Length: 238
Image: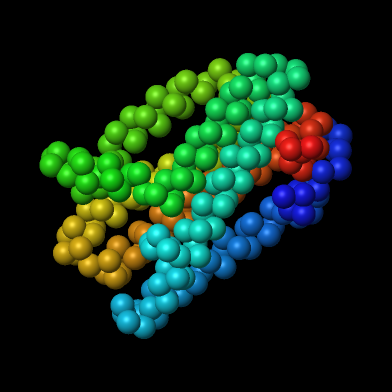
């Protein structure tokens, strides 16, 4: 990953947000996310049907470039967090462990993109009255508990990094839980027609918000590493 995030040491600059230019990998990720999302939106704008649609470019399909990109993005973020935790352990073992545990959560999210744990949960909860995508309800409770448990960890971070991470989490959860819940009800009302325009709008919004949230989190993590004097590259295996 050194080609994305150069491993040369960087001195802390607490007074300013690090320039995107200093981290060339981030604009590459933003560009890839934007292009893949735009490809799906473009197909919906054209109103392509099942036969004409290029499903490899659809954000709502497991076997698509966007889903593959999301898996890699989440796994890469998890790896960055583990690397950050290993480096931070020299100053504070507790903080180091917290970063590693957070990295583990991102690895689980990456696995979910490929294995669809949440869809299996929805199937098991299908008999429960409530939302069409029933997994959203227990997921919201788990996320609320997780954010509450993360308060001591967040307090150890700089105010700007903390704010950036909270905004990133808010954007991600807005898509993953909020828009997903609404999308499920719209899909049900549309007779499970996955190409219904209202549902397609929500699907693109949902997946776009999730991807944007992870990218914003990467910006925050990179800012934290810069502020604390860590090399921006992943040196975990050196």
